[in-house]
Image (cartoon, rainbow, N blue to C red; front, side):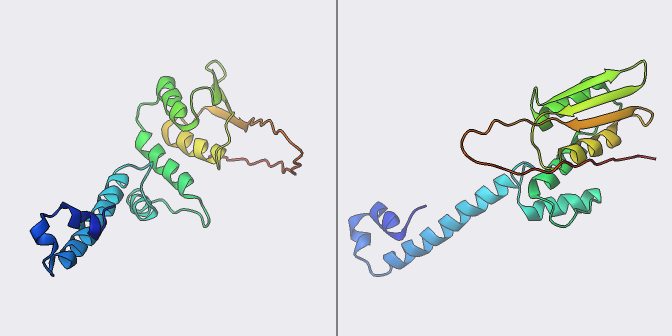
Length: 176
């Protein structure tokens, strides 16, 4: 960001002594610095991954999403991105590419049992509401007759003398 003094240094010497030019340069600095912030904000709002909350709210209105109270911005972004990723017809290759984007390569294990029409998904990375995000994607793009089992298997190595408590939870999503 440039200041009034930075702009004054760019002027020829005979302008620097004119009374009005310091005020003019201060106005230039204010406007150009505001414009720079606006350009950065506009650039960031072009992409779901970096946009602000107001832009996410606009996308949620377009898609008819109603976020839960207290839901994080990252979860809401992921929901919007998943909506954009929905491509019909369903294919396992397309699903794996989407999962690579969501969890990273190696961040999950997807096992498809075609004979029994069953799928087993193990999420190996910690992602807020990771199972819910997966299920929303799954229900939007896959066939209804497939049986799905999803679990999270997240392991961390903690070094040091810190002790943590934990909670075990089980959530069942059933599509009827």
